Length: 604
Image (tube, rainbow, N blue to C red; front, side, top):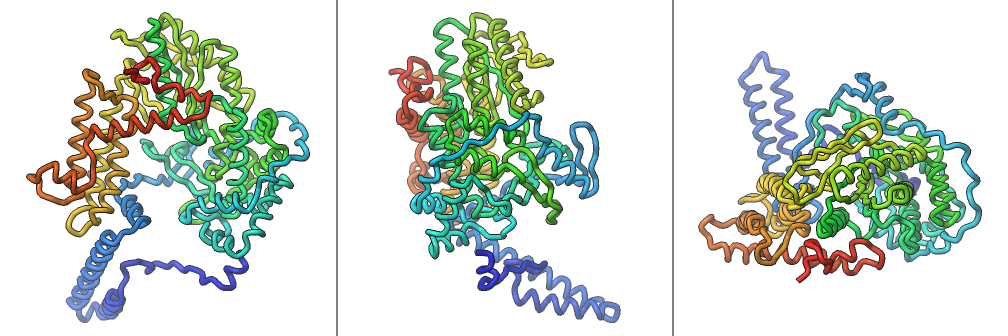
C-alpha cells in the first residue's frame, strides 16, 4: 500500500504560508512590502503604508475566511469549530520535574524523563510459563467481520509511522478485501504481530485540569500506530471481549471498556446498595482507589497467565504476547521525532486492544478482595476502583474498608500494579447530620472520610446522596460551555440547525450528565429547584438558536428552536436509562435497579 501511494499519490507539502486564508491579494501586497523594505531609508512613509495595507488585508482575509467557514460548516467542520472555542492549556513546560524533584531542561533530558515515567521497567514476574498451542479464534475472522470493524474506524484518526490514515485502508479494502482479510486471519492464527508494526509514534499530551504542567505526571504519552496494525488489534479486541462477555468471565462490578455499561450505571449501583443498607438501619462507606499509570504497568507474563485463566483461545494468547513484546516508541517533542526507545512493559495507550486487555488484567483483584473481606463489594470503571461496605457503625465500616485496602494492596504487589495514594479517598454515606470522624487505613497512611462531597466518575456524591453539589457543578460547567459556544452564534455565525447541534451536544449534555441519578418526577421529591435551573438554561439555548429578541414569547422560542422543556428532558432521560438497564443480560447488577424498593428504583 505504501509503495502504491508513493507511486500515484501526491505528497502533501506544508510550509509557513500554508494558510487557508492566504489569497493572491495578500501575496501581491507582501511583494510590495518587500520592495518597500529595500527602499525604506529613501521613503519610510511608503514602507509604513505598505506594512499597514498588508496587515489590513490579512485581517480582512482571516475574518472573511472564518465567517465563510462557520456559516457553511458541515458535520466535521462544525465540531472542529467547537474545539476552537475550548480554552487552551497554558504552559507546555520547557522544564519537567519528576516525583523525586529532578529537573529536565534539554530535549534529551525531557525525553528520557518522559520515557522513564510513561514506560517504567517491568516488575519481576518470574519465569514465564510456555504459551499454549493451537486455538480456533482465527476461524471467526471473515470478510464480513473485518469489513464491519474497518467501517467503524474514524477517517480522522491519527496515523502512525506509515503516514496512512484509515481512509486509505478503506480504499484498499474496496480493491482487495480478500487479501486484507487473509492478513488479519494469518496474524491471529500464527499468534504473531509483525515487528514493523511494533514501533509507535509517542505524542506527549498534557492532561486536562492540572495545576502545574512542569510536573512530568501532568502529561501522558499517546501511541500512534499504523492503520493496518490497528485493524488487526481491533479484531483481537473484538474476539477477546466477545469471549469474556459470552462466558461471564469478568467481574460484574467492572463497568469500563464494556459494551452497554457506563459510569453512571456504576454510580447508580453504589447508590442503590447504600439505600438498601439505609432501609436496614445500617450505614455505608466507600473507598476510592486509582491505579497509577494503568496501561503502562501491565506485565506481559502476568497478562498471558491471566488470559489463560480466563479461557481465552490459545492463538489469541500468543498474539497478545507477540503484540506486547519487543515494542519501541519514538517520542515527538516540539514537532520533532526522537530516537527509538525500547519498551518492555505495558500496553500502548491509543491501541484499540489496550482497554479490554487492561480490564482482563485487573479482573483478578475483585474476587480476591471480596473473598478475603466478606461484605465488601467492588466496583470499577477502567482504572478507578471503589470498595463498598456497610455496617452498624462508622467504625465498623472503616475497619472493613481497611481490610479491603490491605487485600487490594497485596494483590497489586503480586501483579505489578500500583495504586496512587494521593488520589485515594474515602466517603461515608449516612442520613445522620454528624460529620464522620473515623479514618481508613490504606498501607501506611490513614485516609479520613471526606466531610464534603466526593467526586467519583464525574459525579459529586455527598453523604446523604442528594447530589445537589453534583447538579451545581454540572450547571457551572454548562454555563461555561454556553459562553464558549455563543462565540459561534450571531449574525455571521452558525446556521440555526448547526447551532442547535452544538448547543445540545456541548451545553445540554453537560448539564444533564448524571441527572437520572437524582431526578424524581413525583410530588414532594425536592428537585423542583434543579428543574427550574435547567429550564432557565434551556430558555437561553432556545434564544441562541432562534436568534430572536429577549421579549419574544418563550413558547414560540422553544417551538422554533426544536428544544423540549426541562421536565420532558429529565423524564425522557430517566425513562431511557431504566429501559436500557432492563435490557441488560441476566446477572448484571444494574439490571435489578428499575423497580427496586429504593429511591433509585422509584417504586410507585
